[in-house]
Structure formats: structure tokens, C-alpha cells
Length: 352
Image (cartoon, rainbow, N blue to C red):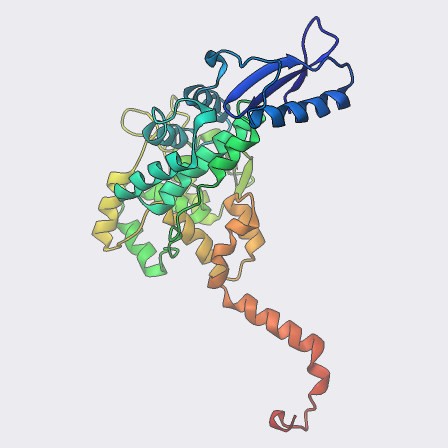
């Protein structure tokens, strides 16, 4: 709510953005509850065009999308590992298409959505772009750059259906084929992904000070979710990191001939996939392979979720279908609790 105290004034002031208009005026009261009531009344009047005793402020005080984009990206930077992707998505699909925040319409966004579909972009990717866009406007409301009505128009744009694809993960034979097809620089990177479930950005930016061989842990401070994560290392990872060469001037675990961290390994990864005969597979699917293998081995979903660094267990539940044992166990528990006493060893089931 846009109620604030102005320096040099004993009264509360109102900062109202509604119906394409922004008005700042004194509530002429020192009581906060009275100011809130006045704010609600004035908001209704302005939103419905019943503006009395006030003039709209100059157009220059209307917030632009460029201003929001700059402020949002500054807020994301350093907090989320996905900064680069979000910056690219905003610049490629939204920047230059919208001028003022308060004038955006649902139709404008659905038009952008349709144009992205026409470019044959993956629906899951389009949804990710719009998720970022909607979050921008959620923050804009927090920062009092828009009112609730603008955010409501943004939220009317629905995610595209058919974006969720079947999980792709590798069988044991495929894992062996892929690893053996990787060139020397790629092999340890792929092994790290398979044995830890780390994201590609987390692996490529991994530094030696984050690896604790003594306690068998990888310590991640900068993750996609901005939360610290500890990943236990198995024997494969201990042997791998113990065997990798270290350069005194390079803090990164994986680096190129120029002593710089790899920006990407897509080209060499695609070559390895082609050589091993694996199709329809992305680097991120190595993370799915890690999670799927654990679930099929009987590891509980809660533990898998913690290893992956998911903020919600719902994100991990996509793997539950790979563990039919948990459903069988649930049914057996129900049977034992409720019906076991009804069965007599000397009676046949069909007689019941």
C-alpha cells in the first residue's frame, strides 16, 4: 500500500497508481488507520475515473518497462545463477515491446506468446520466459511501480499446455557408452553430472575451495535458487577429483587451454552423443539420470529432493512413477492394518 511519511510533514501521504494514473497527495491525517481508509477511497475513485481535487502527475512519473527490467536484473544479479538466462530472455522477447507498465494488456502478452510459438520455440522454454516476466511484475508490485490491476492482467496469460515432456534418462549401458565416447576434457564433467546431479552451470563454475575431500562434500553457495547446498561425494567423485590436475593460477576445477572456465560444452557433448548413438538427450538430462537412478534404487523422494536442491518436494515428485515399490508398500501397509485379522490360515480367500 502506498502510504508513507514525507520529510517535513506530520501527515501521512498517499502514492496511488491506478487506471493509468499516478497521484501523490497528502492524506491530511496523522492517524495511519485513517490514512489507509482514505487511500482505499481515493484508489477506487482514481481506478474508476472519479478523480476529484487532484491532477494526474506528469507522464514522466509513469514507470517504463525498461526501468523495471533494469531494476529487476540488478536485483537478480548475485542472487540467482540464472541471471544470464533471464537477462537474455527479457532482452530477446520483451524489451522494446512494452513502454509503460500501467498500459500493458493481456492481449499484448498473448501476441508475444503466439509469435514465440510461430518461431517453433519449445513450449517449456516459452513458459519459462513468461514465468520470469510474471515474476518481474510481482516484484514491480512490491516496489510500488504498479497496482494490483496490472498484475492481474499479467497473470491472465496462461502457461502453454503440452510443455511437460517424458523424463529422459540413461540406462546403465547408455551411461557406459556416453562416458567412453567423451573426449578427455568432457569426461570428468559428465561424470560429475552423473554422480552428483549438479546443474551444468554449477559444474562449470565449480572451484577447488568448494571441494572438501576430507569430509567427502561439495559445498555450493551460488545455486539456481540462491541457497547453500551440500552434496556428498561417492568413491567415483573422490577418485576423480584426486586425479584431476590443478593449476596454481586457476581456481576452477574445469578449465580450457586459456586457463579460463568453460562457458559451454554443448558442441563436444553433442559429438559424444552422436558417437555413442544416444538420441533426444540434453546435458540437463544427466541430472534426470542421477535422480531417476536413485529413485529406481529405492532412495526416498525427500532425500533425492534435498540432493537436487529443489525448493519444493513437488518438483521431485515427477520421479515417483519410477519407484512402483513405494505404491506396493503403501497398499501392503493398508492391508496389514485393516484386514489382516479377517484372514484365517485355514480359510480360502474365495470363501470370504
